[in-house]
Image (cartoon, rainbow, N blue to C red):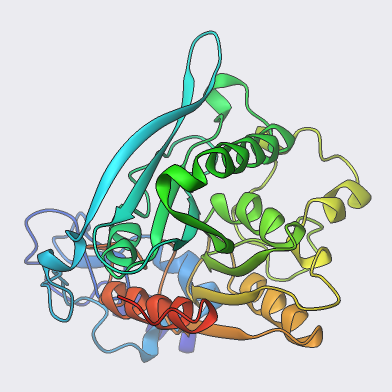
Length: 328
């Protein structure tokens, strides 16, 4: 009876939306052939969390600025740099530098997602500029994607080269090389978390919708990476362990970790984020778990869900504490 009921709920609501919209959880509301509203991938999401308990599933959500105003992103300057050139393309980074506060500035390196197929420095632009306006510099980096023949080990090397470029310009950019961290979203999380665990001076890591174990031990399995060509060289469990942050957590003084994940994420299950936090805590580290019931993949982005501002504000409080950042 339960299955019949939840299936029926999906089609009971007359749809008044003109184009595809999202609900506050980040789910897509679409119109079926009968003119009723349904949730895109309803059946898939309902397999991992019971949607019949959500009474506002079909209410469209539109972001309206509340606690964060446009001016909160503007107290910084942004410059673009090329840090590596290939024959047919280049890799660039954008640095958001504070115009107020005390230098040298602590900073965060942001690594975009996109399934290793898409993505650029526009990812995390809002988060980075908000932090920079509070005195915490942000550096948004790119890496070689599948379309240019990229692979995971290459991505790791490119993030390392981006870091070397940052060190080379640290004095010019007024950066504090003793107070830095990494952040990543989705496909950017395994690349960023690897270096967050490997660099001894890294103070913190922020992961949104992250994957930290490529061995497939964590259940349930999501749709990503699922034989993604980007992982073509990671062919054994030992190789998977060597590049998975879960197995690289330092035994002493690991970086502080904040994760943001939704329990309705069918792309990367939230249990991945829980596992990383568990490993950090076992080794004496600090964690902040932003695990949101019913929220889907990518919910932390602007215009995607009603948690956008909350996640940024919690990120800032976390970073401020870990960096002991008192000057804004």
